[in-house]
Picture 1 (tube, rainbow, N blue to C red):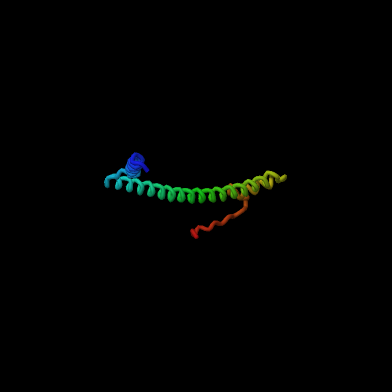
Picture 2 (picture 1 turned 120 degrees about the horizontal axis):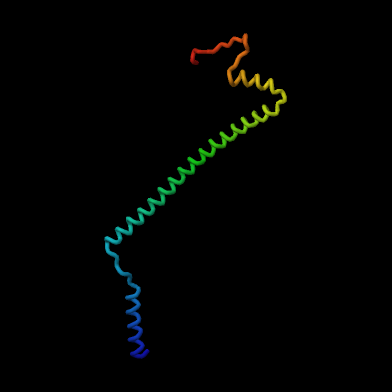
Length: 116
């Protein structure tokens, strides 16, 4: 190699070393980056936990609504059977006695008032 190539290689090698060096961060900047990273991780974890709690709450609400829907369907079936009855007088009599609390003229009713 001639003298000129040696100088060029040495010059390029020197500039390569300068390019490979990273600028040093100040200790304050390292602390800020560490705190920001920790805060982000803490936010992500708390967000996941809160989301899981909300999912559990919504599942319990869904179960309650499904149970309520089942009861309403049973009640609807009962009403359908009442409407399909051909004897309207028997239905009216049963409704008056069971729901409205009416009684026959000579009927006596006894109620438990012991509170048990």
